[in-house]
Amino acid sequence: MRRRRAPAAVLLDRLHRHVRRHRPGREDEPVRPGTPYGRHKLAVEALVRGSTVDHLVVRLAHVAGPDQPAHQLLPSLASQVLAGQVRLHAGARRDIIDVVDVVAVIDHLLGARVSREVVNIATGYAVPVELLVDRIEQRLGVRARRTVVATPPVNHLVCTEKLRRLVPAVRGMGFTDHYYAAVLDRYVTARPLLRTA
Image 1 (cartoon, rainbow, N blue to C red):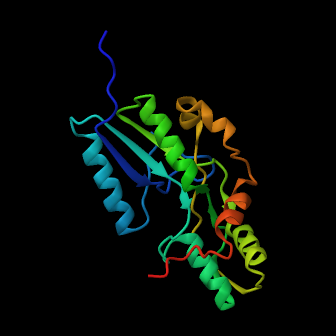
Image 2 (image 1 turned 90 degrees about the horizontal axis):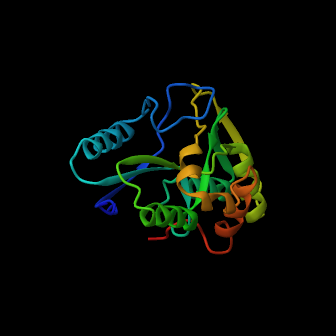
């Protein structure tokens, strides 16, 4: 019997907007990216999936870590809180995951030689952005005025069944509806989330 090889290519993609709005989106369901960037990422994913190269495609939730670019979600929210005014989209929710856990999950997938698969790497818990702002305010000791903008509803729920099947160690990573708070506590501190240069 031939031993399975580890994938030669790993594509880090992002979670895409799912067509079905009221249940967690699976990897094999149709998606509808809402931006040109999202459509480009999905097109790149299709090229990789259609190639003859052994590959692994991972779709990442909102990754949190140190020194993030200013335009990303958490640095943007932290900057707005510090400025005293935050703009929020009505009903918006985000699945937040620590970069340390992302690396650990990818390491498990590569160690198991998972290939020619698309895998959502997420906690499975989409947190209302208001709760993210609450926690950021608490960490920074600042209260900001909030402006809520009406936007079309979007499904931010992510199915993690495949991830949990392929990486049983995920069960010990603390992915619960309160996981995000520990992640924010780790990165929204005296050391800024925001990249300074």
